Length: 198
Figure 1: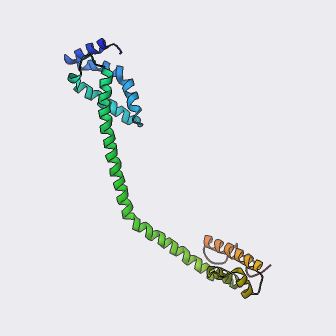
Figure 2: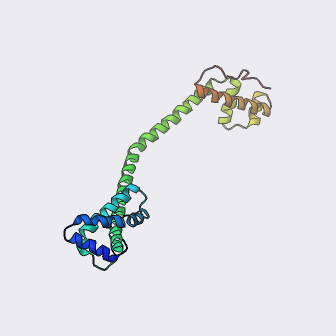
Figure 3: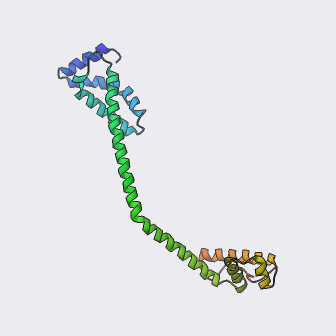
């Protein structure tokens, strides 16, 4: 509907009380209006709602439309106002949601920290218990490593070579991983020669 005279004729009918004639305006301008709105808003449901609001506002504001002006440009002006209100509403909603998230985070933060600390403490306790169950040589190598002793010092204490200490350390770590995975205690997967030095 590019003919202004045709638009004017329909507006005259609406002004005489035949509001159903406005449906022709809606059908003619729906596609360009929705395209404009979709370029600003990415949710299809919101585009539909905004288009409906724009047409309703246009119908109510028809007495303010100056005859001879571009009706499509007038509609876009109403659409810009509706978009401004929409974005303000979205911003308030987003801020409210963020405040809610912050409040929830603050409420559960202490609980999360306590749970994490409890998990760490439990893991350390399990690890220490597994270390106590290691054979003597392996236990000595692990504790020496935790105390910061150098491999050469450990080798001298055990009366073996540095290479053997590295080998014992590898076996101890493997055995600890296995026991932590399945719980402490002997069982399948236990090193068959835990104290042996190749």
